[in-house]
Amino acid sequence: MSPPDSSPPNPDAHRPDYAEVPPRDLVQVGFVFRPHGLQGELKIDPRATDDPARFEALPSVYIGARPHRVRRYPIASVRYQQTKRGVTVILGLDGIEDRDAAEAIAKRKVYATEEALGLDDEELFAHQLVDWAVVTEDGTRLGAVVTLREMPAQDAFVVRREDGREVMIPAVEDFIVALDEEAEQVVVRPIDGLLEE
Image 1 (cartoon, rainbow, N blue to C red):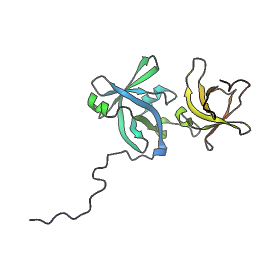
Image 2 (cartoon, rainbow, N blue to C red; image 1 turned 30 degrees about the vertical axis):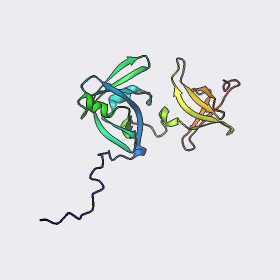
Image 3 (cartoon, one colour; image 1 turned 90 degrees about the vertical axis):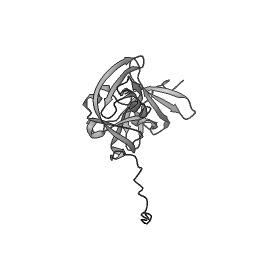
């Protein structure tokens, strides 16, 4: 009878095959709503990106709950569907061939690398501004960014004030002075009445 195997267990034996990409290099570009049809396509909410058409230029995406636990999927097809909430991206991925496989990655975030997106050093997506402090030019803190909301006339920052109220500041040069990435601050120039309920 052969002696029992006394070698230590391999900690990587059951480790999921996460992509080896630094989390800091990933930018969220969407969210997987749910499967679309029976062929493995996915309905993607693209509101994390400034332009849904960016998906057409991507060779692959990374999908996972968090940027340090993602899997890479080459893109097989991209098309669009107009809904009441705006444009939905219908994404086909290599390796996701049926509805069951699509279900397995539903409700997860969709990322792309900064390099694949071709972002300028100073270019930011809206979701990257969430929780940034909103301050006036003299440094007075007004609150924090909740989201960037698409409006008919122009987009607007939704800002949660210190007392819990939410106000909207138009995302235009008249009101937004600067985006300070190092300090994670949105510097604004409010006018009388802008921050009232």
